[in-house]
Amino acid sequence: MNIAIVTPLIPTYSETFISLHLKQLPVQVHHFYSLPKMGYHPIYDGQGKPLSSDWKGVNYIETGIDRVFGENGTGYFFRKKAMVAYLKKHNIQAVLAEYGPVGVSVMDVCAQAGVPLLVHFHGRDAYHYKTLERYKKQYPKMFQLAHTIFPVSTDMLAQLERLGAPADKLVLNPYGPNSALFHHIDHLAAPPFFLSVGRFTGKKAPDLTIKAFALTLKAVPEARMIMVGDGPLWADCKTLAQSLGIADQITFAGPKSPAEIAALHHQVRVFVQHSIRAEDGDSEGTPVAILEAMQSGLPVVSTRHAGIKDVVLEGITGYLVDEGDYEGMAEHMIVLAKNNTLAAQMGNQGATRIQEQYTLTQHLDRLYQRIVKAVQG
Image 1 (tube, rainbow, N blue to C red):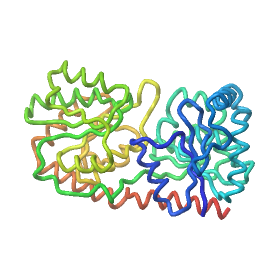
Image 2: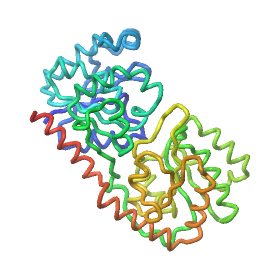
Image 3: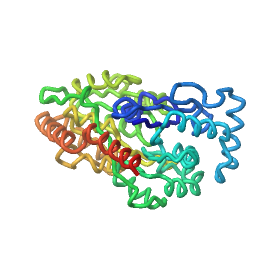
Image 4: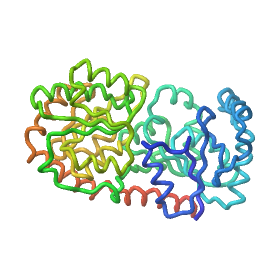
């Protein structure tokens, strides 16, 4: 089976879910993608060659036209024409668009080529205020044209229904961790170390995680924290740690590969993440980092936010607090830092939950089965 997977750009280190779609779906994948600031419609075809032109001048003009006239389908004229020809020439049987705006950008192409469209939402695309405003007329059109729409949490499923997605087209498809990398171990002997993994952005609220850790240190001076990732708030968070006098107790590790993150899981006792809905509306889907941590046997201290509520069982596989409540977060961190037996028990129960309900195999199978259904009509 030949399918096209369309992404905004070449996937970044934090988009492990998209990388796994590209590599592990049991189909022949043709990967289409664009360039930064060049709009959501792909510039490069499934063979890594320009669809029509990769000259910046042409693509800036096409992107500008789409921003002004995209609601009536005028934008990306040359790219659309070239992509329709590619889909027909290479017998592409279905198109999977990663993120809602990408689905909008290729919906006319799919209609013209007679190829079913499936759209996978991931987080920001369903909640970010400016994105919703920009696509408020185009999302409903895309929902009607699409064969299947994938949300990754029950919260997102309800949100997409509010935005106009037909209930019978919605298929809940939370992610699954890569079990080839993330292995369950018992953390009974782990020191009172904490791990945070994610970009330093508003919806991750790394500053609140740092404030919670500062309170934790007062009760458990031997505690330490590793923060993996980078992003616009990285420098501010380092400054915050210095101002709180805890910079020596936090390792700002920068971006790490999945294999390196998996190794870090075996060096700590607890995974922490203070996700919130950011001021611009941006929100999580179901954070892969939490699924990976639970797969590895770590208890989770996080927030009642988005898909986190679906995965983490409060008091059983970890603890959740309301968004913004870093003091409550610290209380739970202290409990687990002082009680390695409880932490290990919660981590083991979390690993069992992932293995039963949130595996990568289950995630990919739901995706594949809907692709097959779309192709078969």
